[in-house]
Length: 379
Ligand SMILES: Nc1ncnc2c1ncn2[C@@H]1O[C@H](COP(=O)(O)OP(=O)(O)OP(=O)(O)O)[C@@H](O)[C@H]1O
Image (tube, rainbow, N blue to C red):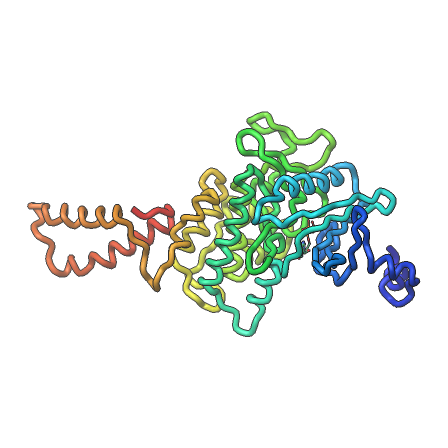
């Protein structure tokens, strides 16, 4: 669209007819009043619309003019997925959709959310005195995990997890934008088409960046229509979740400090580039060992080593910690007592002197923290 077109479309130069068109929309015969624009994606605009009963919905309008066949398949795939997930509480509800061949638009009517997580994080991180808040972070982390677990239960990999794709609906997070998600087939790995409008690589896993157009040892190839495909599995979603958690803690995703996009992409896939996990988060707030452990495990380039979302939901970091304390299990306490008992029974060394005993608490605590941070297990 030319600058003039754009100016006359949005300025008062529109006719009554076009004004009416903008304000009232029919979707499969049902009338809606178009309100304000509430979001914008790479391929769509999202509006708040009101039904005749005053109920509000979100309407995603996708312009199909410049879409090729594979992009069309992608949009259709998204609708199929949303229909399949209609009863999943953690996925934004699809109410209706309509393809207008004449106007070349796809309209998708959905449950309306309040704001996306990107907006929530931007406000929190750009405020006057931004500080990493473990309580809020734990809340959002659990919410995100519940969302992703809900789709993983259906063997669906979202594959484009980023803060903007989590929507807060009445204080509860829900997933949106299944544009490049796909059902997982055998071996929990799928080749997923990713079209040309890739945005930021900040949340993309190393394996999703690698070009898998070359045949793999497993013999899987990508599409034969020349489109670029990637190998994606549930662990890719876990990496992306780790990037979002990292952003909440340290103020930016792990590779966002690398300004050049190509260098950033190369850093994500290069195992020599080590991810730093500083002891202090945004505003100098201490980052617990358990949290660093969770981050480390999600952000492993070796995807087999990453925890599942189910494991993350019972991860030590989600268990409340008080200050410098660590979570204790019966098994772990048993191991500690046994170690002390063995030491006391060592006739060659004799009973431990008081100075040695005084060091036990600090020494055991540091070992437990190391176990939590590096192995994600206690006991
Ligand atoms: N149901 C909804 N309720 C409220 N806001 C929404 C809703 N769906 C989308 N949005 C807003 O619109 C933005 C874009 O939506 P969406 O991610 O679905 O579009 P897209 O064109 O598929 O984007 P992308 O370029 O990420 O593929 C979202 O980040 C969100 O802010």
